[in-house]
Length: 306
Image (tube, rainbow, N blue to C red):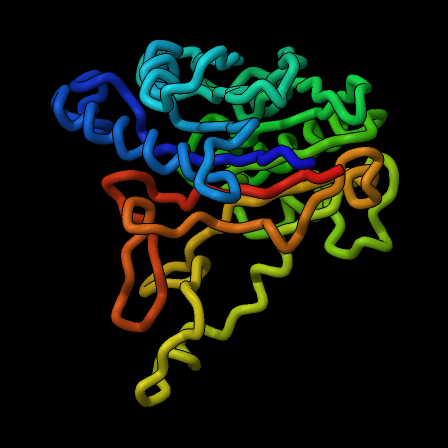
């Protein structure tokens, strides 16, 4: 048995004409974006199905979440939405989309350093109940959207480091934890290493610390060295490099129990960034970048088995 967990930063999902420089400009643009998002989300699970648990970031209000769920055509979906504090910003939502998720309950939200500086939530923590072999098991599912480099009242790196400490506290004392999201830094950044103290090796993942399952995706060739070779084309779509600045991967972290299958186990082979004609476009070098009309991120999905 398995459940699919997924995350996607859906980029500036505002009501039409509500944000002067961001989001859809017309109702038809909004409808088209919602349709594309629904199509992609509806195929994130293995076999082209809707994921069981989905987290989305950069959505402005609960009404848009409802429209997105309606577009999926799912029955009985449950939603936890953490709204922004100001109208021009965005929130985070966690959606339980299939009956495999028996219930979902809000636990807490991270609002930046001491909760005083952020207009939008940095993370949303929920407890999902899943029936495993006839027993109700709790999976703590944490959706992250850490501070970007946009200047604010507090230095962004320190804000992200504090979000890392918040996330570490929410993993401590809970057996089964999966955290996914847009961290706005690479897996090797100070905020990950010092704030979250995430491990890159199975053997060092202890109770209270979590494993960064995104590390294997960094084993890609240097962009300049690879693409300057005559007639070079990468053997598979690359998700971290493009012309200009590096693309930042969204990431997934799991607790020791999830590495050991107590009772959920992360299927590392099934961890993937969803690349299709609605989420991406190819460059001449063979690299792939997000299709900006849909999002500036790739959806990330993984299976938990038991």
